[in-house]
Length: 70
Image: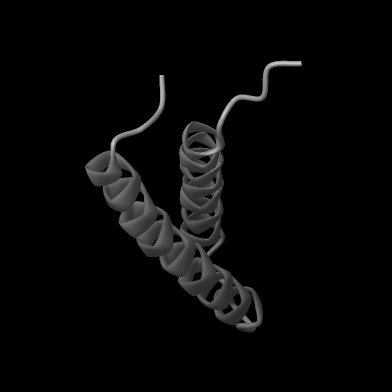
């Protein structure tokens, strides 16, 4: 079933927000990893959050990609 214009707009906005958060986590993870005494627990949490974001981004991208019936 195709998405409505409102759904597509909402998904696009959420995707952009998630992608930005994903980029921000990349920066935070890199900065934390470069510390002499890195907080391994915090680093692990950031990486786990980043993976969850990647899953949500993939899910939304799949929803927004129309099915092609061959």
